[in-house]
Length: 373
Image (cartoon, rainbow, N blue to C red; front, side):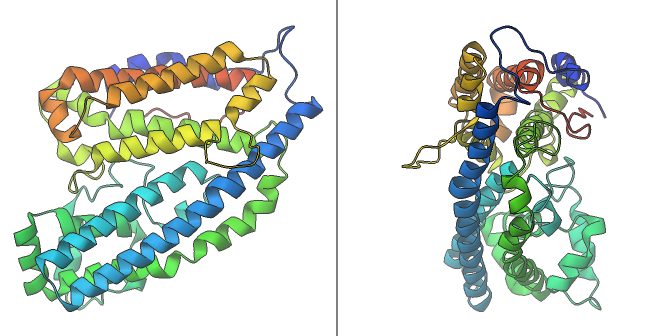
């Protein structure tokens, strides 16, 4: 289904399919200039050293903490333990969301930690899928069941969110106390995460050397892959995470299932987290004490100071439009104009990237990531 507001506002971005690598007298040739090649390689090393490796460690620790909280809750299901496992899930989920910015070779998507490609995959949009699994008493609910259930979008983070947040805390506790298979499924999702978390580093190591040496500007280039992922994640924020606004303004109805993490009330926090990590990646703002290289340094090397300033202003505007919002589910209905302003700010950033940054950096676009359907 297409939504006219979003498609109209992104019409200019369809130029991404035909943009060429344009050069003028003041712009260097990214493909052949050795200084720019060196900058690209330094940027790839920066991302590996200061973003990916530390974030892997954070995620692994967070998953371990979540597993411990699930075990404690399973052994002694109380309201206090339920609150602790809910908070642990929120922390882990936001960390995994940050990893999406660094999924350059689909090495993390394969783990099924979260499904962020199609809007109806990241929440459990059809609770009957879970309830039917719970009702099939002949089926053993374990980590292998989660792994083999990809056809029904059984991603572990959305499953845990559904089990922990779909009802109010008292009813959730009662369900998990009185329906053993709900607790069994919770443990299964947890076990799957604990088993698969160790694959993160292994999957990255399998492609790391290729990435770090991918100095080309074409699609095989490491920077090119980074840029495509940045564009993809921004599009997900615009089209998927804010699509509930378009449904509401077009049809006058609010569908909470169109918001990611609506059950846990984390829809807005998710967008804030994505933008913050997006900004860190763009500026290489990882708190490093050594010299690092980000997209800002590369644009400076291309003599694109004006474009860099425009992108910076657009990022600032996105943050400014986020500031007045407190609960995306409620704001869509009660503060529609503010949410529309937020969507517009993301669209402006999107246009700058597709119309200008792609061109000056000679980026080759992944056609799937340029799809706006």
